[in-house]
Amino acid sequence: MILESIITCPHCGTSKSETMPTDACQFFYVCAGCGAKLRPKEGDCCVFCSYGSVPCPPMQAEHSGNVSCRSA
Image 1: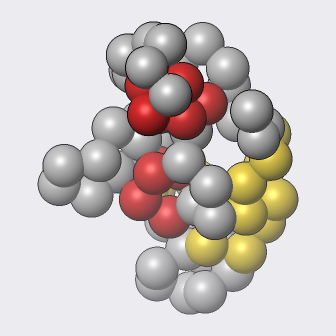
Image 2: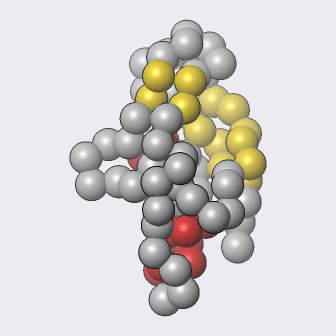
C-alpha cells in the first residue's frame, strides 16, 4: 500500500507531498500555497482521490477487495 501522495491545488498549482491516513478518507485539505480549502470532486471519496498522485489507502484497499472508504 502506498501512503505518500503528491496533492496538487487546482487553483494555484502548488504541489506538496502528504502522508495519507490509513483508516479513513480526508474530506478537506487546505492548500499551503493559496489557502484554498479543497473538497473532493463529485464521485470521489476524498481530496487524495481528486487531487493526489495516488488514491487514498481505503480506496487502494477497496480496489484490492479489502475495505470500503469512510469519511474522516
